Length: 580
Image (cartoon, rainbow, N blue to C red; front, side, top):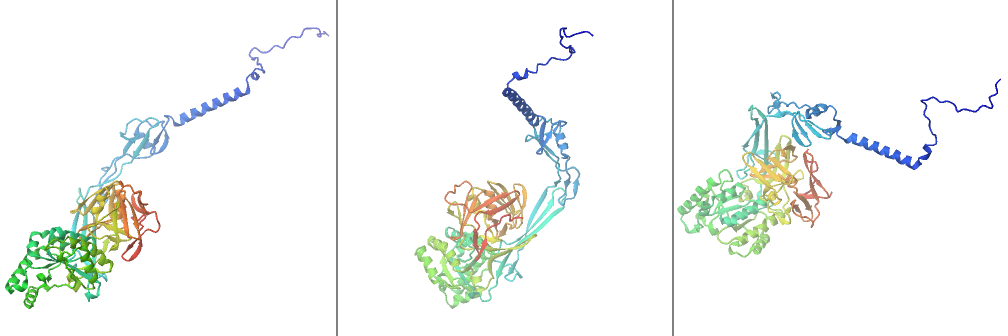
């Protein structure tokens, strides 16, 4: 046995492909450096992920984030989400097919700009694909005014009194421009409610009468005041002045006032022969009857100076007229001043009174100013201001109420309270006629409210359409119809605009909404304040804000106690989401 203990030890032989690793090398790298290196690597990887996720590898189609792989054109993007760009069909006014694929073709937008079907797209683009849709042939609408009708307080149909005009029904027929087919028919009525007085003097009524006109300077102002308060009066006119101003006679008759005769040139009839009196009255009748045709007939003659005798009475009766005198005379012809005229009337007024005043024969501005105070004051005392014929029962009394009938059913509108005042930007506004209240909403004439609210309007009398342009766009209103359009989109109104005594009456919320104005109501003082959108309103807090909600127009009251005292009742003045 060989002893190897003395032999020199040799290192073991390792394979040539086995690397020599120094296990102590890693120990030479400090731990903080290793941690920093790992963090840098993680940050780089995270940044790469963000770049890849939001980089040019994705785009947006109708709000959907999609991979851009395989999407080379705008048409590819539309197809990827199932949007058909084929044109829709052309339909007739009834909705029947007229021309296949004759409608609106689809449209494509890239980053907000129109593009063609084969326009290339890149990563990061925002694509909007609008599908093709059907189109209806153009519609032509014709409007026909039908004879009006009335009802009594028991809702029984009665003939429309001649004194009431401007309540004609409107018949709208829509036809296709291409086919000529009738697409729709609407018949809407605004029916006045009248009251026959079996014992007229028992009703709280007063007749205001005016002699010696018409004189434009004063008669026009008096007509404006009466119209603004829904009051009626009787004008005893002189023939030679009526011949010079026939438009004032026609306006007074059209607005429901009564025309009486006061002689041709204010001659004392007690000094004339019977033949001369007959010729004078006949001359006036020949002039006035054509001017008042279709309105209240001429029933009355008031002799100049009130001078009368048996011959005068006989001639008046032979002419088919009645003698008109008075019971309250403030002697305004002496020009005592507006305060004196006002106090004299208010001190002596009584139920069934006939008040004599003058709109001609001299300076009458004092009478005008007294009337400006008298009319609302008498109405606040509960008096109806009516014509002579209404006072004695020759003509039925118009209550001011109307029933509005449309395809969606009837609703009733009442005259708003006499105490209601409308103020625009701090200045009182005198409306063309008294506001109406229906379903808690106010109906008002657009003039002068719309111009005062920094907007404009047009009344197409042939089509009976009112266009209002304001801060919030365009509003198209069809009178006596619940169908309207805001900025080209159809809306359905709960309370429609109406034709009321030949005056358009528009829902106040619609005017405020389209003009961008604000409104508040002071229930203690009965003042409705409107502020135009360009007017600073730091001097008060707006209790009402009119808000556009999608395709609806709605009024949202900020204060829960907002109300309008209308027609003797406290009605909530809130119409939130009211045009369902």
